Image 1: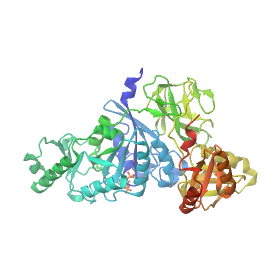
Image 2 (image 1 turned 60 degrees about the vertical axis):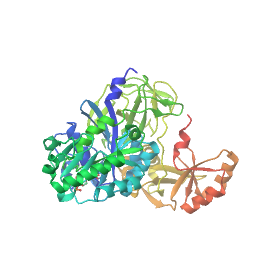
Image 3 (image 1 turned 30 degrees about the vertical axis):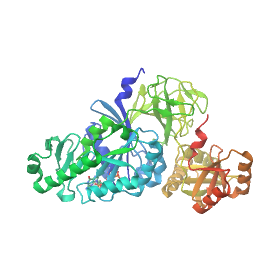
Image 4 (image 1 turned 90 degrees about the horizontal axis):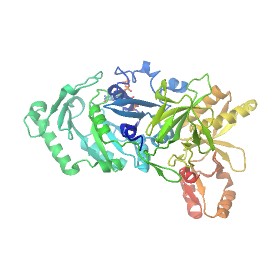
Length: 533
Ligand code: G4P
C-alpha cells in the first residue's frame, strides 16, 4: 500500500470513436485544459498535423491518418491523466482493441449527425467484453443533428448499454443554445468559438428550473421544452449510480461541441470525479491489485522505428502495480530472464522525457531490441502473465510471396518482427511452409509491404486467400484434435506460438465444422492459450 497516493491520483483512459466523429478535436481540448498545449488548432490543423502528437511513422505522415497509438499525459486539477490515443482508421482496429486492454475507462465520441456508426459498434463490443466503464460524448451539437432522445435511444439499442444523461441540450444546429447540466444544476450558454480555452463566463447557475431566469436566458418556448426534458429524464433515469458506471453497466452522457470547446470541461470535471483509478487486473495465477508494493506490468503495444535511421522499437508498458524504476532489474516472465532499462520514458509523443519511476496506471516507453512481444509481463520475480490481451481473429488473409529470393532472411525477420509488434498476425500452413498474414484491414498490407521494403530491404507481394476467419482450436481429446487437423489440413495453420488455427472459408463452413466436430472447441481469440504459464 506504499503507493496509495500515486494510485489515487491517476486516471488512464482512451477516447474512441468512428473516424471523423471528433476524437482528435476532443483530445486537443483536453490537452488545452491540461496545459499540455497552448493553442487551439495545434493538434488539428493539417499543416501542424504533420508533426501532430500521434504521428510517429513515415507512413502515417504520408497518409495523414493516425496509424500509431501514442500516450499523452497531463495534469488537471491535481489528477494525473494518461490519455492513450487510438488509431481511428478501421484497418487498424486491432491496435485500438489492444490499447483498450491497457486503459481503465473510455470516452466514446458519437457524432450527433451520424449517430452510431460501424466502428463505434465494434469498439463498444470490446469495451463490453471487459466491462470497461464508458462515458459518452455526443458531439457536433452545433450542427443539425438527430433528435436528442432519438439519439439516446439509438445509442442504447445499438451499443447495448444503458445511458444516463448528465447534460441536456437546448436545440441543435443554428438554434443550439447550450446545455443544462443536471448534476451541477447550471445552464451553459453556447457561443461558437473555436479558439476558446475556457468558457465559464457563460455559465448561469439555476438551482431550480422553474425560476424565471430560465425563460430570460432561453426564451419561453425553449425554457418550457427544457423543463419538460428535465422532468422526463429525472423520471426515467434518476440519480447516476456510479457503481453501475464503474461496472460498465451505465454510461453517463454529455452533449457538446468539441470544436467550440463546448461541454468539454463539464465532461472532464465529471470524468476526474467518477472515472476509475487503476483497477485490479487478472493474471494467469491471481488478480493483482494496483496497491501491491511489488512492481508488475505488461506490454500492450510495440512500435518500431520512431527514428527511421535506427532499427529500434518502443514497447509500451502499462504499469499495473508497485513502482517501476529506471535501471532496476525486473523479471521478463516469458523469457525467464532479468532485464533493466536505462532510458525508460514517458510520452508527449515526440517530446520524450526519461523517467526515474512510474506507478500503476502509467504507461512507460521501453527501448527494445527484440525482447518483447505483445502481452509480455514484467514482474519483480513472480511468474505470472497478465491475461485479457488476446489476438482477435483477422478478417483478411493473404499469402506472402517473396519477390526477391536473395532477401529471404530479411523477409522472414521482417515478418517476425512486424507481427511481434502486433501489426498483423502470422500463420504458417500446417505441414507446409506457406506464410499467411492475417489483418483486419487492407491498409495494413500496404503498411507491411512498405515497411518490409524500407526497414528490411525485402520485397514481397500478397496473394489473397479465401478465408474469412481464424479460430484457435483445442480439444480435451488429443486424438480428436489430431484427426481433425489431418482431415482438414488444407484449412489448418499454426500461429506464431505454434497453436493450431482453423481457417474457415465462410460462416457456413465454420458452423458445419463446429456441429460435425463437437469435441473440438473453436475460439475466436487467442486468449485461451494464455491462461497458464
Ligand atoms: P476524428 O479524430 O474522430 O477523426 O475527428 P476530428 O477531430 O478530426 O474531427 C473530424 C471533423 O469534424 C473535423 O473537420 C473537425 O473540425 C470537425 N468537428 C469536430 N468537432 C466538431 C464540432 O463540435 N462541430 C462541428 N461542426 N465540427 C466538428 P474537418 O473538416 O475534417 O477538419 P478541419 O478542416 O476542421 O481540420
